[in-house]
Amino acid sequence: MELPWDAGFAMRAPIFEPLRALARELPDVAWPDCALLNALAAARDARNAAGLPLRFVPQTLRQAAFEEKYEPRIFLRGEVQMRVNNWHDLFNALVWLTFPQAKAVLNRRHYEALCAQQAAGGANRGPQQDALTLFDEGGVIVASTNPELAGLLRRHEWRALFWQRRAELAGSMQFYVFGHALYEKALQPFAGVTGRGVIFECDAGFFQQPPVAQLAALDARLAEALSADERFTATRELAAVPILGIPGWCAENTRESYYNDTAYFRPLPLRARDRR
Image 1 (cartoon, rainbow, N blue to C red):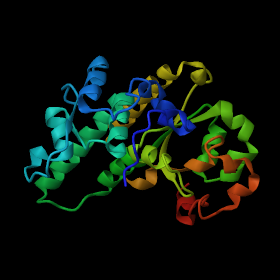
Image 2: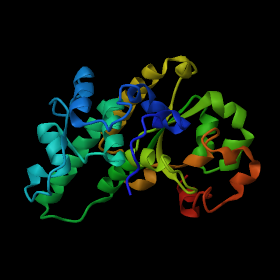
Image 3: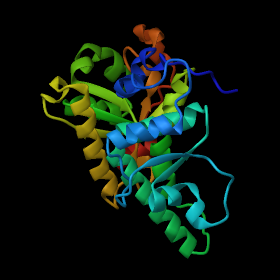
């Protein structure tokens, strides 16, 4: 059952921080429609990877023609289909407006992978498509000014990262949700919500910039990373991020014992340790 429209959603939890400025431009009492979202896109000159202006359009019935499918339609016509009064699709639109460069490159790679799949006679999805989809739906950008903390995250040393280095973490590592499915889950968070992250090392002054400058810089860096064909080729490249373990993102994580739950705060698998 779809949750009703809530104009104050972005102020309810820190996970929504990247969307807060944009959320202030949404209606108070009614769902944002395509016309409003298109006005926001035009004001930001949002475009797809082919340079076409981005437009949000009502979702149509599933079409058989390749050019009418979801990702091809975005790349070939700049049209992002969305369901009305639907949080999942609204969050996708808001991520497009917040990280337009990265979303455009992500769509291009989806389109190219689908073209290759079609040329191969409709072969099954490959690991690259799985990685791209996983990040599109559940991605988190991790900005870190401290390589040691980034190392703790990569090694799944959750207690050390989120508890023992808690005070240091606040000024040295920030988490920016990219995946629209994660935003939808955050409306009704539950134990086990996990994102998949990319980690960017930043200089010491990064977090002193205004939020809008931080988001623009991360959008450009993510777009560059996504543009590299050797990146995002398998899901194992993406770092696990247990969302409710991030300090301040869950009331329960103010107790050290919260991090005892190894079903949520999972150690790094042995095979992954061997790779490192």
